[in-house]
Image (cartoon, each protein chain N blue to C red):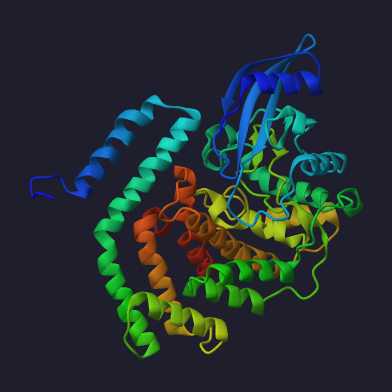
Amino acid sequence: MSLEVPKLAAAVARHLGPPGEISALSRLTGGATKSTWSFDALVGGERLALILQLAAAGAAGPTAGLVRGSNDAALMRAAERAGVPAPRVRFVLDADDAIGEGHATDRVDGETLGKKIVSDPRLAAVRPRLAAQCGEILAAIHRIEASEVPFLSAQGPTQQLALYRGLVDHFDHGIPAVELGLRWVAENLPAHPRTTVVHGDFRNGNLIVGEDGVRCVLDWELAQLGDPMADLGWLCVKTWRFGGALAVGGFGRREDLFEAYEKASGVVVDPVHVRFWEAFGCIKWSIMCMLKGLGHRRGARGNVEAVAIGRRIEEPLLDFLDLVTGRE
Amino acid sequence: MPATAPEPEVILAAAIDYLERELLPTLSGYHRFQTRVTANVLAQVRRELALAPLQENRERGRLEALLGHSGDRDSLSRELARRIRSGSIAIDDAALLDHVRQSLVEALRISNPKWIGE
């Protein structure tokens, strides 16, 4: 995907003011379903440090219900009002910009690479505090008024199981480990989950971390109304530990996450309930990998990152087995 | 192909070696990441060429023991998946769990040996 500088300059000038001159444009690492660009823009006499996020055309995975464009921006603004460190939206692209679907936000300095967050010596002092900070931030996300974000779709555990069951049936490849996982999920559905705004992809890799802790929570397009414990479980999925030894994002302990969440939300955390979502998270991620792989079978042309994800289906399936058979 | 031509695994080893030892140290940012991923997927292909035939055989043997009849690996695996889904085999069945785990471990030996500590 490419980004034309004159179009970007015109968009900045239209939305924020002239001259809109662009400098230091670079494509950032990562982003399999979208592209992320960093640039500086001259507005009035001020040089703004900005990020542009563009949705990729034809992204793989269950894309129906993705929060995009102006909704994505509205959600991040609601999150900011609830006290969540979310990206500050500067403008939303529209049809006149002729760039695609996306938005520009303030650029926040810090580390986003999961592997660095679990291992960089510069973050050693703050690392033990990250799990508790994630608990506090999640409590704030779960406090966002649902009425402020009416475009979010309801995705409780039963709907999510039906969604992933349907995807697996649609492709009909009959993978024993996936079937085993879906059976386990069906037999262990939480009885009476609460329903709140959930981030949907709150994990190491979607956080900007600095020496002072979590500075920003990224990637809101999977947000939905659902069981808040889903966010806690997803954060513990082994894939997002990036080789780190600890359960929470590779950087922290479950107890610290739960305790901080309870303190900030007043809601008691049941570890078995969170474990359900961690286990289901493994199955969901393996199905997402499967979809990514299926999009890049014979005859298709894909980028190397997408192809690599299509080869990761077994990792979370083994993690699932370890989790539910008590090996972890 | 004449017997004088370098084999696929030799070609892959040379390509991976160039990417990892020569190109990668000169790169940063987006292209460093993409090149890292490229070297990784080529290494997967290299391991698949070496390991897949043997693994397929072993998996078929386990499936035959589990299901009680013979067949090719893919149709046996699909049959097992159907049995799990219909509930005709319990998901805490020790032989089932053993087979599923073994199959995942073997697949990871190709796609990502580090995941299983190898």
